[in-house]
Length: 409
Ligand code: SF4
Image (cartoon, rainbow, N blue to C red; front, top):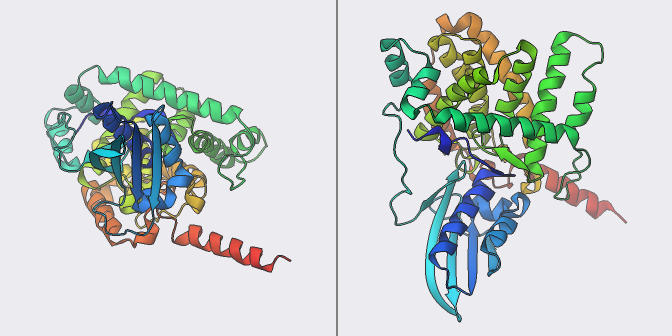
């Protein structure tokens, strides 16, 4: 497995696979063709169908600036080897001088066709939860200590920056109000939810409101192209920060404690990324929000210093009950259902932790098995439900809008 530095990336939203990955590809292509006088980029699959909503075209054009770039959205070609494929051409005096095909494979990572993976070293020799647990038990260490052993102490500095960025993101989201961009007229709600926190109701209701406010805050920043941390993706960037921030304030955990928790959540995200996928275009929202929920549940379990079996159970429960979750963002924007979904998943992570506290001894499903199941389920999901905005809520919303338009005088 790779370093957690490749999982937790800091960058601009709204989508790791639709903005961060294409920007990385465009930077690489531009650097290799510095003498080009214009570029052309063709987007296929999910990039073509939801690229406008995700602002893929804007992000690519800005990267090539000041050299001009023409973007083509090819919505017809369904035979691409990866659902997030982009072709780039460089021209000089109308002659094509270079071509590159790139797959944006999730979490901001890319693969260039015909080239070896842009390879970074494998940091972890263990690639399954079972192997990691066996190592930790043999050496009498916690998963967070295992992470620091494999990565070296410097990972703590990266995780500290990650945590600071997550907190800034929540603070900025709570301070903002108004409508999100994209034409769906979605109002920001984080501040409103946060301001309801003193209403005198049960503790559970107050907890719900605060956790949701934090998740909305981070996710609304993402939708507004703010600076976020992929955890594991931009679309799912509100789950881990919301669960950890709420718990830190409630229980007084230090930032050092949170770094431990982020390390364990990161190991869980890394296992999913290595053995399945964290890409909504590849496997639906279960791969994004399901993974984020699993990471958050394991991170919380580490905060409370639960055992390895309980950490595994928390991560497994959190993923299991997202199996089959489709990706159907309306208008291709990372807003509906994405923002609300982050809030629900943050609460679900807290519920998974609670179950793990009492029931981990009786479990029958391993974390590795649920990851494999998610991967298989993702392969079985119809194309319409893998970040194409051609099925589910995206389709029915559009249909309803058209029928209202037709009825208007
Ligand atoms: S529905 Fe889920 S996977 Fe799809 S864009 Fe929204 S958050 Fe990402």
